[in-house]
Amino acid sequence: MSNLYKSLLTISLVFLLSSNLTSQTFDGEWICAYATTDDGANGTGIQTISVAVIGENHFVGMVSQAALPWEDTDACYLVGYKNADSTSGRLGNYAYNTSFNQIWLNGFDQVFMEHARDIAAKGNLIFVANNDVDKNILVFEVTDDSVITHPMRLSTVQNPFEIKNLYAIDIDESGRVYVTTEGDESNTSEVLVFGSPDQETAWSSGHTAAPLQTITLPEPGDARGVTVTADGRVIYVSNYLTKKVYCYIGDPDTGYELYNGFDFTLLDQPLADTGNPLNPGPWGLQFMETKNILWVTCANDFQLGDGYQYGRYYALNPNTGEILDTLDCALWNFEQTGGFSSRPGGTQGNVSGYTSPYYLDFDENFNVYTQSFYGWTVDKWYFTGTLPIIPLTITSVEKDNTLVPNEFKVLQNYPNPFNPSTTIQFTLDKRSNVSLSVYSLTGELVETLINSTEFEKGGYKITFDASRLASGIYIYTLSNGIQTISKKMTLIK
View (cartoon, rainbow, N blue to C red):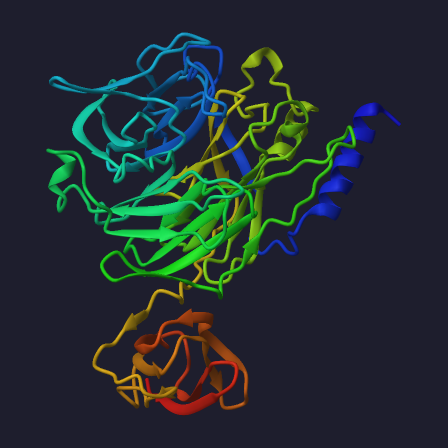
């Protein structure tokens, strides 16, 4: 038996036994369309940590030597691509193994890009979670031939005695910006929500504003990923140290609550072919709008050598955290090159060769763009099947201040009969963990509207969309673990 075959068999068995992936529910496979060549005219130049997509084959990669401990020298800059493939599309000139700090410059106001880890796109604007002394969110603009300063920035420092490094960033459809702060084994990370440039004048002058909301994660750790739905009503945050992804529901005006019905913990315990254990955790997150698929990047902590043998992107059910599919870039590298740290000729066009995925983004056709930190590439992946659409059922709970919360109670839905949607109201006389489910008359579960989620004392309402159901009588049931209340409703089409 050849050494190559032994290695492949060993890795396959380890991944099979150690993965928490229980089923593949998608009808195709992921193929790498191209990876930008790392040592040619199309390369980013050096370690590439994040990617933000403007359109198909139109994106920005961010170079940043962002692994702690930070050193005095730090390459940190943006590389634009348009009409990209593996060998063409780069905007600007960047030497191989280059090192410089891009400058955000507006008149006499200048900020150096330093130790940034993540970027996000809004149209042709790129938002950078920067780690200069004021922890600015810097804004750049992608033009036809380069990436230039846009005259907006916002300092996230509120207390000069409690300055926290930034990690991940995302933007909702209205332009509100969500960033995470760094944490560790003893300190909790936060999610800071800032107003959009259309509403918050500090983006253009003054450059300091208080966040609309601050979310403190429930456990110490490091929030390396954040993503938000387009309407800003659901936020997902990864904690690398606890290996969890948290889900918050609410809105930027009234605040967010932890949604306990979502449960994702990375259980993978892979071994390298040397027998050494690897210790991956969840990094970047991205919510795929329209399809309603939540993606989480799972990777090791800036690990060379054995670390190249693990790197995955999991597609999750956004309501429950269940794994639905896997894009395994480490396995792809092995299948294409016969190893985990090889790119034949340095230019093979469909493989990065050195697995180190931390972040991802999508284009309008649902292609996935990833990066390889130690491969110095941005990679595009396409799906050979049809991606499913997953109903997002956890976004429709709202506070209802017209209700008096003096008892645990569910009201009759209205309208009733209805077609196709109706509103269900309920009250809680104390903080409670509640579930709200819809059943057929035969007792079959039709839909879970709220899945074991804690709510403060108060009145709430939720919209149930039954457009996919047949006419008939259905039963909705509210439970707090002690009491259960059920009522009937009638759908007439």
